[in-house]
Image (tube, rainbow, N blue to C red):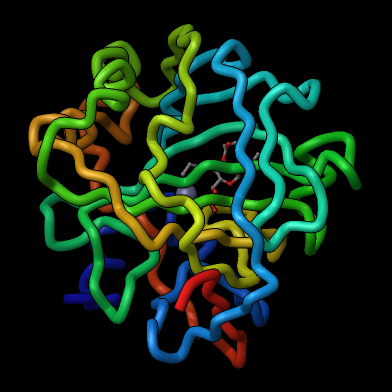
Amino acid sequence: MHETAYCSLKLHPIWQEPLAIPGGDRQSPIDIMVRKSVFDSQLRPLKTQYDPRSCQQIWNNGYSFLVEYDDTNDKSTLKGGPLQDQFRLCQFHFHWGENNAWGSEHSIDRRLYPAELHIVHWNSDKYSLFEEAVVEENGLAVIGVFLKVGKRHEGLQKLVDALPAVRHKDSVVEFNKFDPACLLPKNIDDYWTYAGSLTTPPLTEAVTWIIMKQHIEVSHEQLAVFRSMLFTSAEEQVQRSMVNNFRVQQALKGRSVRSSFT
Ligand code: SG5
Ligand code: ZN
């Protein structure tokens, strides 16, 4: 099920404003139509090389919670796949729904997942700061992984255990030695890729999206902890649960989605 109008009504008010900005020709997220995606034999395997020691903190920014990495050097990097350059890990975060029928930003043949992980990297071959890369067409690379409800995910649990400390907007907690590779599916060689944008402000058309074909499984209890997070700060009178923090889907506008597999 995917009903954009319905879902957009549930968005956090802060998301409404940027949705009114007329987008360009490569906005995200999109629906990936499997039979219209084009196999590209040139697409290489992805090479992630993450150093868990570059993990620094978790921050509730009022949209999602971000697990942030020290990106002052090339300790944690992504290359290969559709990428020509080396990209540096800066953060990962999730988008999720109030129930299991929706929550992901991308969909596969219109099928939504309850949540989607985004691992964000910037092009450190061409730029020297995230802020520079974010306005460039080849500035960012984001890995997307769908989450499905099933078995408890052992790697995710360390993060889930830390979340109550950052329940409110603007809270930050130190978080160390976390390897985001533990959140990737077993087979990272099969993915779709397309040229898109950030799905939150500033919505810049800077992103090479790499969407994993395989999903990962997390337990209902783990997702319940995501849903117990808050959009609101400790000072606000009325607390609002952090759920449905996804952007509505955008038009493909002639873009092609390539696949690394047949
Ligand atoms: C950018 O896009 C934003 C993140 C945002 C992701 O990385 O960063 C900036 O614009 C900093 C200049 O926002 C922040 O870090 C807050 C300043 O992440 C979120 O807001 C969490 C959802 C969104 O990237 S995405 O396209 O992969 N969803
Ligand atoms: Zn995201």
